[in-house]
Amino acid sequence: MENYFNILFSEVNIALTLLLIILIIYWLATMITGIDFDLDIDVDIDVDVDVDLDPGIEGGNMDFQDVANAEVDRDHVVNKRTRKLKWWQIFLIYFNFVGLPFMFTFTFWIFLWWMISLLTTSITGSYDNSFGYAIVLVAFIPALILTKIVTTPFKSFFKNLNKDGDKAVDFLGRKALLLSSISGDKLGNAEVMADGNVMSIYVKSLDGSKLSFRESVLIIKQSDDKNYFLVSKE
Image 1 (cartoon, helix red, strand yellow):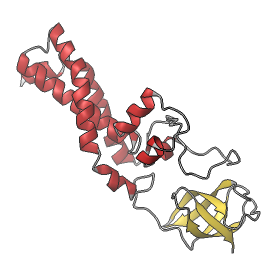
Image 2 (tube, rainbow, N blue to C red; image 1 turned 45 degrees about the vertical axis):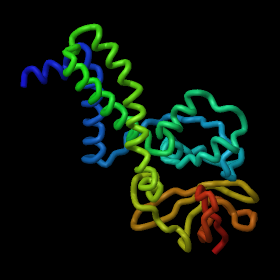
Image 3 (cartoon, rainbow, N blue to C red; image 1 turned 60 degrees about the vertical axis):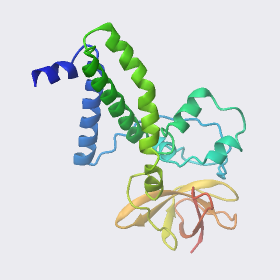
């Protein structure tokens, strides 16, 4: 037992071991408290996705969860990009850091990296020498490949969930309260009560007519890209 402890917290493995412990605490705190500690990181993909967004969107409420949990279609990246993607953007997309919740993929990656490093340094007895550091660095690559393989099947699962991890709610036919004025092609936010919870959604006027702030509207249908809802006056 003492030997295992020495390997876990050896000078070679201690960084990944501590990081994994922090991640375990993170997930336990999330499950127990229900508080979402998701990182507020903006991933600028620079692709021309078929989202009818314009500079007139009000509120600036799109956060990391909207990006991290969004399903990025390969066609959007390969066939419809407006300019060449940067290397780190390709990296994030390919290894599922975009397309799945960021912390979900990140946790899988750190766990697999830790596991490969731990097993390899233990077998070779290099957990306390310079060769062990080289193994940890090299393990970075197979851990990413395994993360890609392991997390890809989860895409279909998360596709059916909303950004908070709950089963997607059917908003069609419900009443909503506008949190911003919209008209034409302008997108705005609206508040809707569903299953006892108040939720915020992106909306656009069905016929382009002006709908005012705090006005009650009816949700008619969802956009083809499933990024917003079309609404009209009651």
